[in-house]
Image (tube, rainbow, N blue to C red):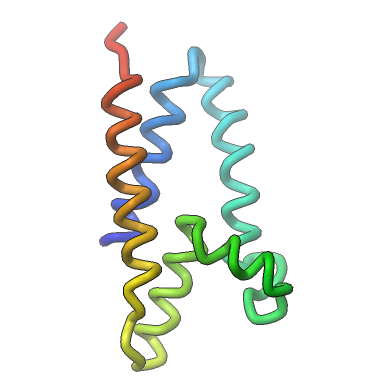
Length: 103
């Protein structure tokens, strides 16, 4: 649930700042592919160099993958991925509320 709460406001911000549906589609794609890369879709996180893995830990999908992987392996979920996801939820939720306009 925290992964959804961390990612959904990003889509709301994109919808709030885009003027057209095509613009939202372009911005969404520009955000989607880097997030998927840092989540480990094309290069597994274990094979990433240290710098990329550190960056991945602070992206919403990277933090979600880290939290889910630790929970599936039966270990304790570290607080860092949960805090990253909560921070994305709060910051982008505030930005979405700030930039949303009724038309």
